Length: 478
Image 1 (spheres, rainbow, N blue to C red):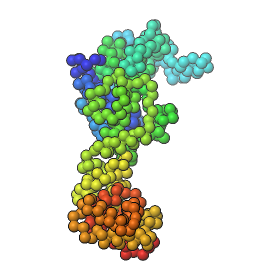
Image 2 (image 1 turned 180 degrees about the vertical axis):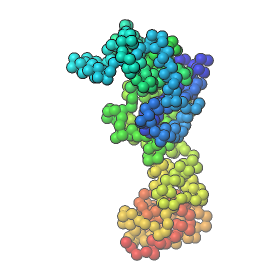
Image 3 (image 1 turned 90 degrees about the vertical axis):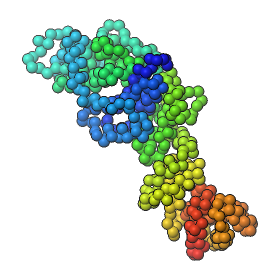
Image 4 (image 1 turned 90 degrees about the horizontal axis):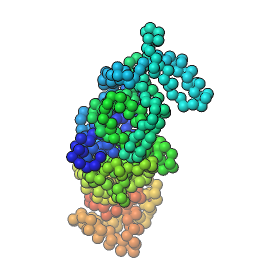
């Protein structure tokens, strides 16, 4: 659809089944639907397809909403729960039955099993043969159970002009008379989806291309009811870097794992998902406002995209560097608390915010920032890792003592004043700055990696710096 006044009527939907977490493929589908609606000034709706009562769970529903909220992809109206609409779905099936577009099928499970076995032996496609399609229901035994089946067209072909896949044609002879109502009167998923999309006013069905075959069967219902046909857009699935179908080993985790376990920012995940199968020239960094401005279905490719966790990490690093320091500190503080076993005080969070300028430039995840910030919250006496300990020999302790003497008179604890004092220590010892920085870093952090040494000194403050250095100066060589 072109960008005209009509676009205010664009309605998209994301309709997950609550049988588990919101996985990365589902999140991308939600994003594409959300962006298309936003780009065209329309509405984005949510529907929970919870008709599978055995597998649908409240924790899964909560996880889906939680993941969508984290990504900022909430619906524009209250979500629809499919199971609650079962009476409406059955109503449509009975309307089709009354209009001659559906029929009662009394075939027994044993008969259908025998039919499948015959088709399997003859190497034929396994589909219902329509044996009750034109029979009079009075031929069935009194009170016999039945299902209601769609009377699918048998002649000609069905064509879908898919907004992503292009023109797709299926011969109607390949369509079977699918079940609309089960023998207990409950509606099938295929019926429920169509009824809900119509009643919710969905104009564009944007979903994975694993649903493409379903579209031809669902169109049978739409046309039988005389409803307006939606525009279909079937998006290629996501594969791993090896070209195989995406699985957990590739990173096909719940969205919550990217947030909680991997330390990703929602901005980075959204940007990465956007670029999985959609593009605009050579642009890689596309913030959400820019994405709304650019997004349309013409930019969605027909080939499967490949998920690359390293690219996501690099993108996350970019968004970390661009992020507000206080925003980052609020996200990192709970991670630091988990690592240290102590909740951070407001003063600690303020210190963490100040430290962000030094911590975030090389970090790719929030966990890396939290790990890099640990030195700020360690209690004396510090514990030293093996590499740090190896740097703290007798010569290093002498150098650290000299550094304490050089720093003690410093009145204004600024980066410039600290740097000047340390450079004098290096010059007097006839050493390069790095040779001084290495044992200082080990003494102050207990490790051999940290932000720049002047940043470490400044962030720790004069009293803590001198105390930590004095601890090492006075302790026996290890």
